Amino acid sequence: MAKGPEAFRTISEAADELHVPQHVLRFWETKFAFIRPMKRAGGRRFYRPSDIAVLRGVRHLLHDEGYTIKGVQRLHREEGLRRLVGAGGGEGGEGAKPPAPGQASAPVGDRPSLLRALEDLEAAKRDLDRLLG
Image (cartoon, rainbow, N blue to C red):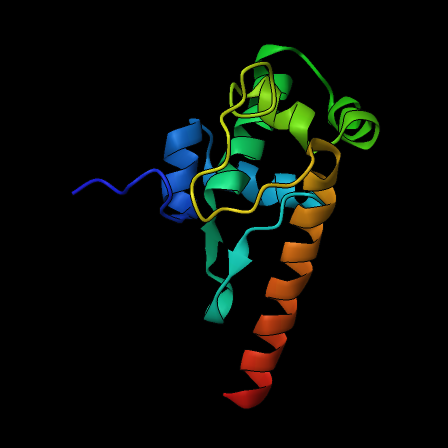
């Protein structure tokens, strides 16, 4: 049974979907601060659909468009995650899909800061889970 589009992906599933080896995804985590998959006990990575969209953009820019790592870092710094997601063919370009019912809608410019806030909250939850359990 195949996973739905909103399901989290393991590193092997993400690597297969993006057509890159697993070690490349781990390497990209060291080069791009905005790539932070959820990590469960034992360090097992789980990629959210938004992570996959960003990774798809990074892969496209590096492998298809010929960007360097520094070039992608600069693009992120200057134009944000929306640009990277758009490069991968996801939301972020013209005709981006509206949020699904029950999903928060943020102004376009706020999305990167909301994603960072979400990542900070998830990190805090992991710390609390570790302390309590």
